[in-house]
Image (cartoon, rainbow, N blue to C red; front, top):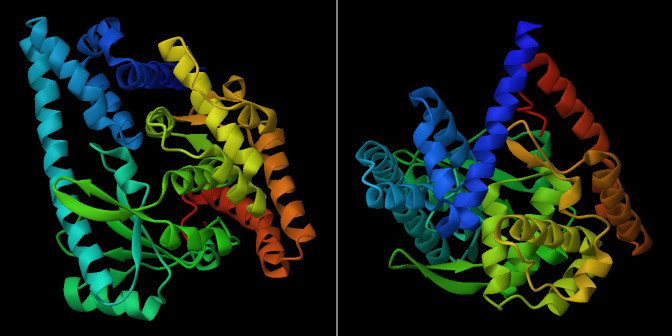
Length: 367
């Protein structure tokens, strides 16, 4: 019984931390009470808060309002704590960004087009891995990374092999470098969609360095694949990043629909955007300006999301399963046999990963 209460207390604390992160990042000017909440946390609770902020890739975006408001209020203890954490994260990001630019430069110079996925969407934050897409073959990528950076490749899981994914460890760089080659999707089912990450890529300057990044529509595509068809959970950064993208006016909803309908994931993309909009309304008081075509295609929204086990969870049954069923049905009716066969491997892989996690606490080697 005592253990049950401890679990409930931990879950409640995590929910409060995530609520605070959402408020600090979506509505920082109105987050006075949230800053007071962070200030009231005990040292161990602050470490947990910072750990969750890191898991959600919003350390800088959540702590900058804390530092600013604590400084204005004369709370030097809280301001110093936030400043120390900000400086530590700034240092990590500066190192990772420098390596990322060098990697992209060397890979491009070798004739391998490379696009930075997801990692730079979090700016001024950065993810815990460096994610890249290339249409080149693995031999060319491996040669550049081993010769220029003394990189070594990590062991690949069955899921990695299906998805065309390779992880590299580079001396001096704490973050893994993750290359997606020629395919996207949990089982590598999307080849045509993947090509857009090279043919439609754009240039973006970050920290005084230039990178190739996906077009706005592809940013939503990769977020949709990750959140609605693979992990079935949101991070705070997904909501903040996507809200900013929609509000920038750069997202072409008709182009997004055209691309995702062809891949069988339009309903998932629409649902992803509606969930983001629902959270914006919850913390800002208004919806994102989404067109009707998005709402008409979304089978559910933020009302289905629950904060559980450190993240904002999308229910797998029945909502996630229905999205997967629609995707595989579309692919099969299109006559894409290789993609259909790959997608049919997903349920047994997911089951194997769940069993492995239950037995060992890790799904490494499967997922």
